Amino acid sequence: MVTIANEHLQAEINLHGAELSSLKGDDGTEYMWQADPQVWARHAPVLFPIVGALKDDEYHYQGQTYHMTRHGFARDMDFEVLRQEDNAVELVLTDTAESRAKFPFAFRLVLSYRLAGNSLEVGYSVNNPSHDDELYFSIGAHPAFSLPLDAESAYDEYTLTFDPAETRTHIPLDGKYADYAQRDEQEVGQQALSHELFKDDALIYELNGEETTMSLKSSKGGHGVALTVSDAPYVGIWSNYPVPGNFCCIEPWWGIADAPDASGELTEKRGINRLAPGGTFVQGYTIKTF
Image (cartoon, rainbow, N blue to C red; front, side, top):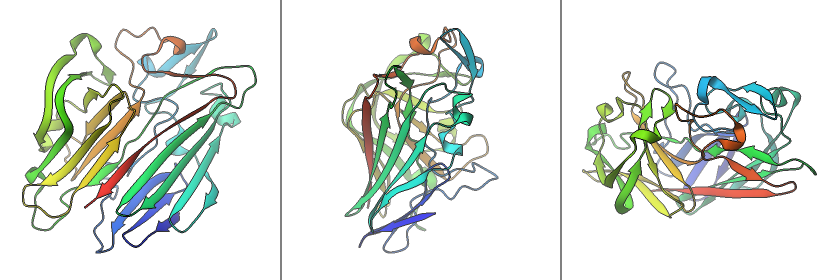
């Protein structure tokens, strides 16, 4: 476990999965879900090298078939500390024989966490160290924010607010697959939270790379949290159902689950990122606490 802190916040990051496991305010408020194993035993897994599920948990690349389960393997691998300061840390994961059995690419994945004021800045850097081969990958975030954040509030007194509020493409799920054939347009502004909101699994919207802030606030005031992402194509909003969890995930994604009719070819996968030899992909998001 690695701990970073400033005058407003303290964050704990587990080297296993480079997972943010705690984000506490100076008054002791814990903003992250504490991974109750009876509900959902994670805090904020890193989704790499896929986001969501592959059709039949497999894909094809250069005539070979590879098997990989939902959200990939990075969340279950041990990262190493690349560098650390009082208020910041960088963690790195590189390909191994174990990873290549599922994902036949060289890669260098760096997760950065930096506290600035009352915010946590999270960064992703994916480098393709190969001199010859392109790297195909997706990456995404899955932070679960604990709700309620005040003893005076209840889960269903929170609202999820999108800024800007506008019409967005909603992509429903068919089981664990993203059903593009059934996508529709929805006005997305303020949404009252309830556990039943997630009875059909995650709510998925296209962001189209537009800077968007998604906030969780109680109608009674008090503490809240906001996540801002400037260049993500998708976001997922999720909580556990039917076993209710007192958390809400806000998940910026640079990738998405396969559609029910996906070909299975990695190079044709919707939302896949394609990185040239020697290239680096840099993205991230910011969590603001209040």
